Image (cartoon, rainbow, N blue to C red; front, top):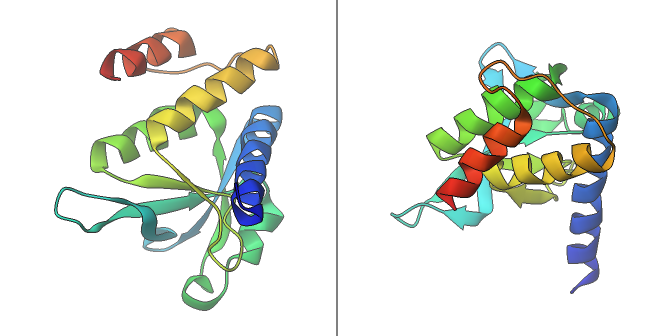
Length: 150
């Protein structure tokens, strides 16, 4: 595994741990919506790059990326429960990928939103934390549904 690949994996793990610690996910938002890009890892059935929405584990990391095409974006806080239930499920349904803790050079982990939910669930379990979801009795119910799809 290359050094860059190791760094991306490490940054992704930091994202998972930090958002589970704080219960907060950060996005960049302007009047038109959240900061988006194109995946360099995932393509659709027509060979086109999938859309990617970036999220960060820390406000300062998000702020550092509010440059160039995103210079009119501001950090926006999202509760982890809302991120899981609204954003990750919605992105999966809409064919988007999650960009985790991208740096100002757009270097970071790209992950399927359902896989991210599974990773977050493992970390929440490890930290002995529970989050309250609106559409599911428990995160384990959501995880069971995801596992049925796999």
